[in-house]
View 1 (cartoon, rainbow, N blue to C red):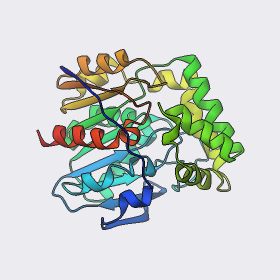
View 2 (view 1 turned 60 degrees about the horizontal axis):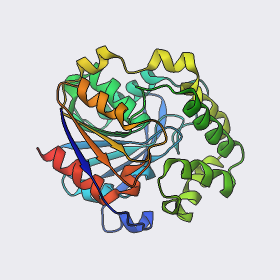
View 3 (view 1 turned 180 degrees about the vertical axis):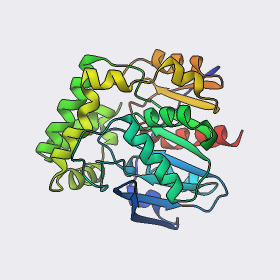
Length: 293
């Protein structure tokens, strides 16, 4: 395991501005029984899959897609029950997310991909890499969930998320997003509007309740990333933690990297739970360097 600390500054722009100039498609694809919203960009020989966190949507990676697409075929998608993918009508646990990811790769004819996941996305990436090592090239895990279960954090995520889904007002949406960030100023009006539009869809509040099952102690316990999972991951892995992550201390990321056969740890300062958003330029540079090794 290697450890490095990185410092960067934030630049804040518009989601659409970030995506301008890049040919891309956003469409719904039937994947494993879910009408899944998928963004595809780039024409590289290798595929990079981007996976957002719990209660999130593919726009979480809006500031990284264009530079990634210059080298890779990029797939970013809304998880089951999330974003504009079909609403959940029953609880969704890690085996469901893992199966959906496998079905997505199959639908796009991808035998082997690099996986980059934030929070829940990192959790899914680890579980998938442990179960299907032959289908994973490299892993990038930024503030991944699944290795820690702090009651106060679980309750905070559940209460903020469900409140925002039940009453998708600017105030409640902003409160949920600002919890993710080191600097509340990085929560732009556009980001609030994007999430409010998603959360205000009929049926989304019910879907959120099924998504939030992972904040129940018993459900979370049976879905946690185990020592056996970490031992089974053979892909080179970059674990990114931040100076201001609200989900847990940097030691969590250090422990993950130390347990992996080919783990590397990076600490990014000036970011919370979304380093790919708050410190987009530097996060992207780290990821591209790692993927090119």
